[in-house]
Image (cartoon, rainbow, N blue to C red):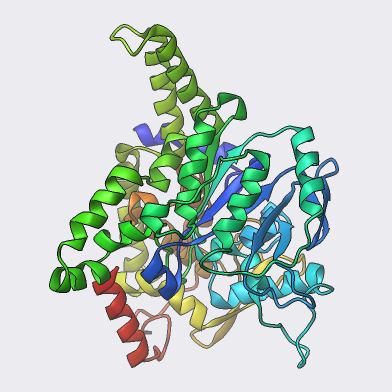
Length: 505
């Protein structure tokens, strides 16, 4: 079975996410979230500098050996004691709110997110972001500088620089006061990212006047930067993706230009059809002719340094030969290597089909044995877990959930390090991994984890299922009801939000 070949990745893959990629300068494009994401599709941007570090959130310097650089971004207000335009934090803190890869959670909800953010602030940011008047977690945009991957998918557009270029950038950047005022229309996060990229590579990042009506957007900066970088093989351009952490937090939305939103989103198409139908072909034509770009497709094309290099070699080979030919054997070999590389990262339809076939009897057995009351409980497990737990740290400082499970107090480890240890509840751990695998297997291609990430989840599920989970787990009463003895009522506001999302997205 073809799937068995890729199960070898279980031995090789050690962490839940791909290892941090040392790309000297990276444009981080964060997908859109919340109601603002529904109506604008813009998202957010930040800049990752692997060779530049920080002594504090507003003081930059060149990195020492072993340091991994910082992410810089701007928001209207960080809530700090001054009026800083930008703030810098390490990459792992920006994405996950942690300092080491083995602390990255397998599951996150709103309470976990706040707990992780406050823990990091207390440890590393308290001098810059002090407690509020009540001595508790303050408000402000500093929260957006932590746990970005809890809320959204993050794409990283990476290029290589030189030590000299980093030093030159640092000197120029530090000479400018850190007090610019945020403006959504003319000095937003995409404008800030564009300015930093162009400080390295003049003209590499641009706005799209036609498709964004003069406002700089994350997608426009990503499109222009990709065009610049992909044409310069010496920069080793590639893209990687940090998938949104599993949990009940709403999945993020695609980054879109304004004209793209106007003809793809129902919330704009329907009113246009009623009041001004001639606008739809105008917006569609403008975008398709002048601004067409799909971030996820670009990621698949340049998903690893190896794929990017093979693509570049193939293009350069074709240019030398005056164009592609039927017997272009070096190019054919490159195509084969690219497909193998992509299959190892994304899987294939056949591989995912085989995983679904292998998982179906596992899930049926879990329900038959009473681990889940029914298929619906699998779908609601993330939310049930959030409503009946609170985050904490175990004795080693790793994340756990203290869960009230049918009147019993249980502890659930939610990192790779502690989910299967002796202090983590085996039943809840197995349920979490089954729900996580199920979510990936039913998700659209774009929204699921990479094959390596999924393989790690599969390995954990098998580990928790060995030798026989049904005999080692406590016997349960099949008539006990669902996870929640008394499920909370869905409010009218929540029902309305779900209705709006369903008809407009």
